[in-house]
Length: 275
Image (tube, rainbow, N blue to C red; front, side, top):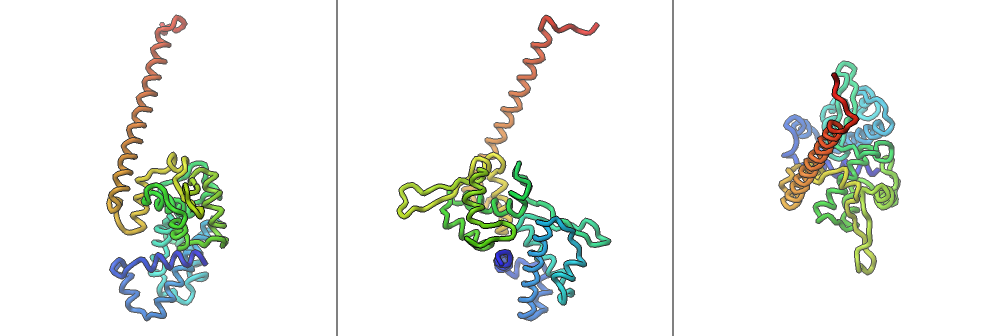
């Protein structure tokens, strides 16, 4: 299952030094077979949570224990913490306990991005997370990424030609759906023989997302900081400054138009002061 491979990749990317003290000790106290079983339970819980997200069903500790954890209930804290961290870093959602007494949970968007006009099934939060990862790869490749680099990223989570229960058919998603929605641009590499293709940010991505935000999320997934990508960080800073200056110009322009309107009303012959 594609979601399982993405979780396994996430788990493999974490060294023991990156584990919290309690989680690390809990894993050290178990044997290799139990560690493998716990990793499988983490993948199973992530799949369970994603299904709950897509169906908007309630999430309870009782159902997690009965449907997924089963005979490994003693290890629920470790499994739950790892699955929650994976949901946050890979899929852009955070687990929040909304009822501590009944142990009800909700998945909350942690991306800080809404993708205006795409909040229905066309682009839900997990899809948004996938899109941001693609935009990040494009950005760190000089704003233009070869198709091979994009599939190297995607093959951790989805496979070309294989239907995914959240993303659908990935090739159609990235080369048609998101291209038509103008989040991505997909074009043939000039003078390539045989023909090669590359991805760029589409105009809608430029309008609705900032390079700094994408860089921050990319850095978080890789357990680093944005300045670890110095060239991209400088470019993102320039974009932030340009956007800030543009907002000031628009604000000043709006204020100027208001002053002109007030002046014209005050000096028009049809305008009379109250007596």
